[in-house]
Every structure is written in structure tokens, then in C-alpha cells.
Length: 237
Image (cartoon, rainbow, N blue to C red; front, side, top):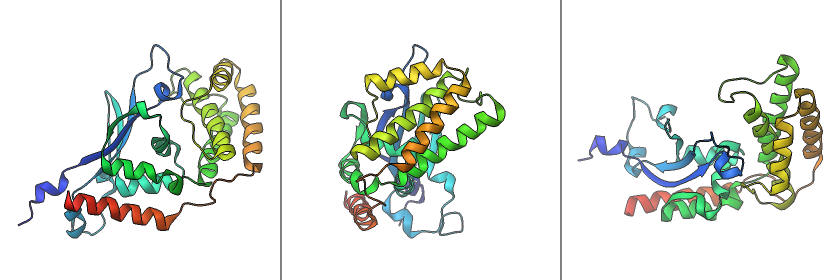
């Protein structure tokens, strides 16, 4: 007999430190943020959850505070990564020392980062940047929620553009910023918002026009085979 409670068990397969500590932008006030990927028992896919074959999305992500940690179920995580979502695709590209939990299944996921990461990142990163430029143009100030006095907000926008540019140029997402990139972030966080808007607008135009050897779209055949491999490992583990 299947233990229904067991179907809610989560197994973390990959977890890492992200945020300012990972980017090289930490200040004395910075905390440590985490993001990760978990799996449910394979049997969960065979039963009806909540009267439906489609799970409630809230069961596919778990967000906690103190410390800040966002965990996503494997399939949802991979879909977000494949869309180029900046908040989670970076988990595939962390320096080794920033991974705090890694299982064999997590290493399989990391081995497929080139299949998952594509020029979809251009749309995701630039789309976010363009929306923030519009917000600054309309409101004349950044949102205070999650960004304090605005410096963190500017660092966040600028850092995403710099990382996207490097990803398209090299095919690698360098999570930790180079010294000159840190300097750009620090300089612009002290600038007035009109200067920030001008810099962002120029960078967005440049990124939009960049040619890249990065794959145009995710390799879904490889991704689906990877998901099957990880699911089978959970079944026989």
C-alpha cells in the first residue's frame, strides 16, 4: 500500500548560495540567500492530488525566510531555467564552492546546463531591464519593497545587464562579477536615476543587437532525457 504522507516528502538534489554573496556585491548588511531544486517521490506522479492530475502550483515551490531560500520542484525549476529566469538559471552556473547541497541527481542537472541555457535568457533579462527602466521613467524612483533605499535596486538591474551581455558573448553565465563590473554597479548605485535610465537604455539596445553563439533555444530532447534519468534514479534509489 502506498503511504500517502510519503508522497509529500521532498528530497533536495541541488542547493546553492545566490544573491549579493554570490555576485561579489555583498555589504555588511547583506544576508545569505539560497535557491535550490527538490524532487517528490516518483509515485506522486501516479496519483491524483487534490482531486486533479494537475498539482497546485504552490506545492511546486517553497519559499522560506531567515534565511531567504527559494526551492522549486525539478520540472518547474527546469522550465524556469529554460525560459532564462534570472533568479534560478544562475543555479546552474555557480562556482563550485557556492553549492551547499549536491546529490548525484543534482550533478546530472548541472551536466545539462548547456542544453538548458539558451538565448531565451536575452528575452528574460532584457525584458526585466526594460520594465524597470519604464518604471523609473514613470515613477522617478524605484520600488522600496525588497530594495531599501534604491541602491540595491540599481545594483540588481545593472548586474543583470552585465551578466546577460557576458553570457551572450561567451556562452557562460559568470555569476561572480569581475572587478570592473562591480565598479560599474557601485558607480551607478550612487548616480541619479536619469543617468541610470540612460545607461540601462543604452545597454539594452546593445544586448538586443548582439550576435551570439549561444544556442537559440533549449535542447528539449536532451532536457527530457535528463528528466527521465533523474526520475528513474529516484525510483530505484
